Length: 162
Image (cartoon, rainbow, N blue to C red; front, side, top):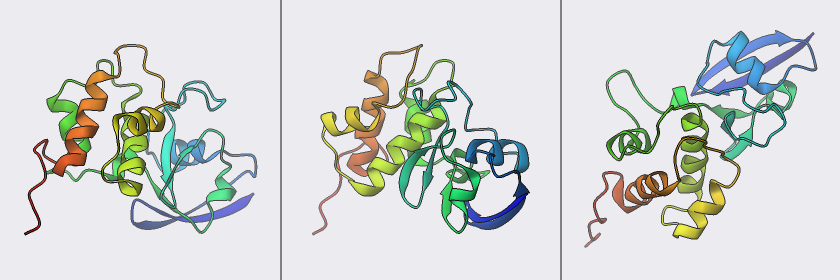
């Protein structure tokens, strides 16, 4: 067994797991965080996307032991019980998702992008979402929601800093 200690959604968490355990299995089975989904299990669909040390990662491809000592954020870490994260709210407001299976991964990829680049071009958004597959929708409404958050988090043009 391997002991893994990480900062998960702001809280330090520890678990003992077999060394071959993926980060996705650790999140879902040891910590009960089921927002990240097991889709393809080979890193092609993006349903398992989480943020590790500020970068989007396919958690089905990362071993849990590789997350030891690192900062991991999942979809559950974005919202509070009383308020959705602006990305989540705008995805809802704009009807960006249908079945929702891909949603957590798409939102986490978008958050990693916006954290790194708060004003991405449409092409940069498309590039950031390239590893996330959605079988229900076109990506237009997702891109609109991400562009709206980039403007100021509410879908309105950012106010002048003057």
